[in-house]
Image (cartoon, rainbow over the protein chains, first blue to last red):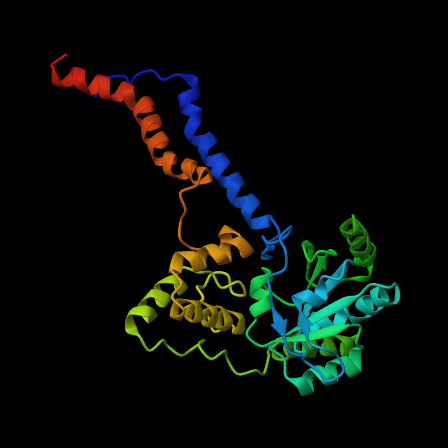
Length: 183
Length: 141
């Protein structure tokens, strides 16, 4: 074979390497990017679904949609006694309550005895606690885990979702969102 | 220091145990519907819905309590006469497209379908010189 290969343009020679480089960069980027496994609710800006949850504990009434539309913004905390981060956020919920924030709770798949022990140990900042044994309300508002906290405005519209425990540094942001929900 | 390490390891081991609820599964989490046709409908839908706790599994495959509650929700609604696609829409409204494994025909998907065509055309373009020289050889040049 004495034939010369056809002459190629300069760009074509480098194209495979460039493609490989781009692919390599994509893989490295995917490997080092912190994994985001949170599923944000798509229900922000929509009104709460209609629900009527029985009381989860004797000390507090159950939770209905009507009880949550009082004209004043409030928090809806999705929690459970078996959830470790829920205990971590308890002091922050208490701090919010002391600043006049009304907090309603939805206890997910919880036994009364466990819940009572949890509230006795970590405090009870809730005005009402609804018992959600089938995760109905959780599914209804697009919450995918515990704990999650929703800011609900006076008309019962979901305005903000906080995924994971409320840390001390999150408290001012939550208060800000509650203020925004007032308008 | 050493005690702290031991305590830390113990805590790591204890956390998964503590983060389990003790409640029995929802009534229709593991119980099939009596009507085989309805159950088949429900099963088909459940296999294409993502478990939000264990995100590479469908709710049909997952033993997470939340997946059980979602199966209960699906079976209850199917038994009440709702269509599978209506239930899918209901969930997508709440969790976004991520909750569904079924591909949707949306503009954001078009690059995916177009990519094979683009790559094929690019390959033909890059190799056009080869085709030409091969053709010449056959005609005896």
